[in-house]
Length: 118
Image 1 (tube, rainbow, N blue to C red):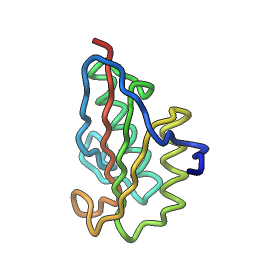
Image 2: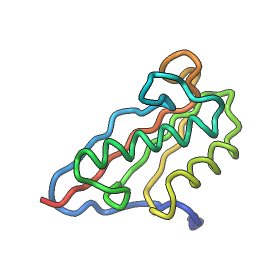
Image 3: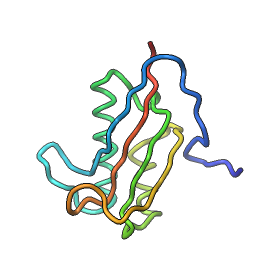
C-alpha cells in the first residue's frame, strides 16, 4: 500500500468517549453557502472544528473524516483546500463523489469521528 503524505491509512481509537460529528456543509453562521469548492471546503472544516471545540475535542482527537464531494467538483482543488483547512493532523480519510450534497448550491459535506479521553 502506498503511504499518503497527508492522511493516515488507519487509526486506533483509544478507550474513552466517541464523538460523531454530523455532516457539515460549507455554510456559515448566517446560513449562507460559501462560493466555490475552496471556500466551501474551508467553511465545512471550520464547522467541524467548531463542533469538536464545543465537545472539548481538537483535530488531534479525530480518527476519521469522510468528505462527500459533488460529482462536478475538481477533486484536486478540493483535496488542496481540505489539506489547507485541516492542517497537519494525520487522520484516516474517505472521499466519496455523490450526485448531490446538502442544500442547493452545496458542493462538499464533511463528517468526522473523534475519540475523546474518558
